[in-house]
Length: 393
Image (tube, rainbow, N blue to C red; front, top):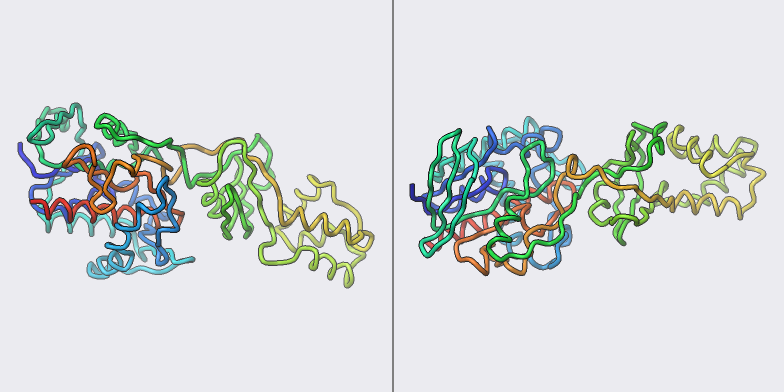
């Protein structure tokens, strides 16, 4: 069977690319339904983009690579598409946009766009062999137990990264890209909770607190959540992309405030009360109790000198924590790293080594912050490749 373009992966990037790549497109995926990661994203409501998406919100060996695609298909373009399909949405926090109803609305929208473009979709289909020659690509497929051979002028790698393997994630895009001469950067779980030694925070599981978390020189002001395994919450997920094994994460438990001023003022008006009592009014009670035990804090606030209060305030503003590890790809929202950008065109996403080979979405070494940024990269990179393919026909 002959097609102009075969797209591997029916996720966000793959379906979006199919809607823009012109005639003769086949999308294949080994899953039983398209857009499975879309379906579970955003608590089932899909944080489909962010109003503040810009190049500075993405990590890559080459921080400039994402600029072209993001500029030519912006968050506002995707919002127009969502509005055009009558999908109601709302801004939650920090520019994060969610469907009012269900993430399935975004999947249905992409399916409709694919159908309008005439793209075919084959599910429960596995790639068993891939060859490349002067006429393009030859794919041997196992489609629900039946062997089929497909030829195409163009091949788009849109299979994502390694995150959430229970949803079918694999490193297939990296393997294919490497086979065709592409360098693949080191990959690691990103936007992922930290783990600590057993029982480290067992008594704090479920406690959340607004913090400023910092790792690798980058900080985020959002919520931190204690779990039975360690630390999670938006602030922690964000800095996990910048953290490396053995490094310390610094947590400010009173962001935007002066811990010393707070403690000194409380000493003047209620100095007879215990320090622990005051901390329990400044922080969640269980957290305050935990910190007092860990830092050996006791006694009345009135009995503490300015030096002691400054030391306590410093600890509150710079709680140094060294994670044992992360929860890994099992719970990571994305994969950091991927197919190196030095082998791809930033304008078309096409390979510099193999004409007709494109790499888009999470498979590329471009990783966004938490909050809809990775979806926006999927949309932007997919449209860049799709338009380039359509214009080449």
